[in-house]
Length: 399
Image 1 (spheres, rainbow, N blue to C red):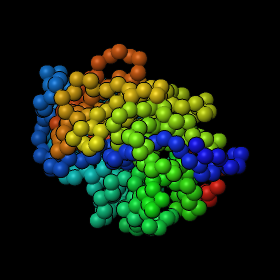
Image 2 (image 1 turned 90 degrees about the vertical axis):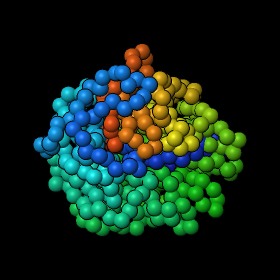
Image 3 (image 1 turned 180 degrees about the vertical axis):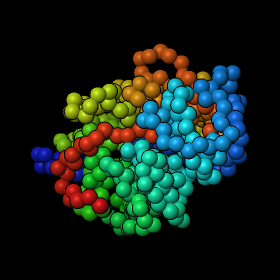
Image 4 (image 1 turned 90 degrees about the horizontal axis):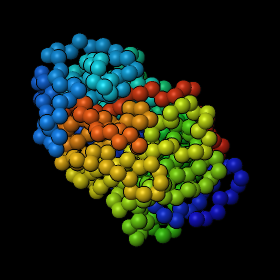
C-alpha cells in the first residue's frame, strides 16, 4: 500500500488487493433488478416452485383492488406484484397498496422512505409531494441524494448525471473525461459522491462534491486491480468497496475516510462481488466511531443466473449463504433491521419469492414472506440528522 500524505485530509493511495463487482447497485436502499417479463395482474400471490414451496407465505394473497394509503414506518418491505406496488411489515402484517405500476424499473426508495424511483427515473411520492416525470434513461447504477432525496445521481457510461426531483431536468455533473463510470454512491451527508471508474490508467475509486466538483482519487492500483461495489456506512466515516486483483483474489475492504487508511479483506472469497449491503447499526450514530458494522450482506457470482446472497460477519472469511436450501439464484434486497435480511429467490426473468433471513448468531431458519413477486426493495428512513462530511478536500455545497 502506498503512503497517505497529510494527517487528517484524505489523499490518494494505492490499494494492494481488491475485487470487481459486476452486478447492479442502486445505493441504499437497494432494489432487485426488474425481470424482463411484464407483470400479469392476479388476485393471489401463489407459491412458485422452489426448494421450499411447501412453506406457507406470510402474505398469502392480495386484495382484488387497490385502496391507496401511506403505510406506517413498520412496513419496511416494499414489493410489486399483481400490477401494483405494496408495503408490508417483515412479519407479514399491515399490508398496504401504494399505487398501480406496469413497470417499476429500479424501484429504489429515497432516504426518508417517502419517495420511490421507477422506470425512467420517474419519481412518485408516498406521503410526500415528490414527483418527477419519466425520462428515456435506464441506468444500471444509481444512488439517491441525501438527506431528503432531492436528486438521483446515476452513471451513464462516459457520463455521471443527476436527475432532479420536482422537474424533468437532468444535469451533467461528469467530473472526469475519457473514462467509463460504474458504481456510484452518495455519501450519507449528501455532500459528496463516491464512484468507480475504468480508464486508461485502469480501475479506481474517486470522490467528488455532489455537483461533480473537486474530484479526488481515493483508491487505485498499479498492478491491475479492478474495483466495483461501493457502500458507505451510515456514520459517514467508512467506505467499503469490492475488488479483484490480477491473480483472481476477491476481497471487500474498507477505507477509513478520516484517517485516509485502508483496512483490507474484511471478506475474501472466490467469486465476484456484485453488491455490498451493510447492516444498520443497532443504536444511534454516535457510538459508531471507526468500528465497522457487525455484518454485511453480499451478492456474489458472475451474473444474475448464478447469483448467491451471502452473510458476512466481517471476519475475513467467505461468509455463509443466507438461503442455504435455495434451488434458484438468490439476491440481497436489504436489511429490515440489524438482525434480518430480505432476500429474493428466483431466476433472471422472475417472478421470485421473498424471504426474511436471519442475521448472524440466531440459528433460525428463513421465513417465506411472499411469492410471485416482480420487484422488491427496503423502504426505511435513514437516521437524522445526517452525519457530517469528513474533511476530504472537496467543496460541501448542497446541489
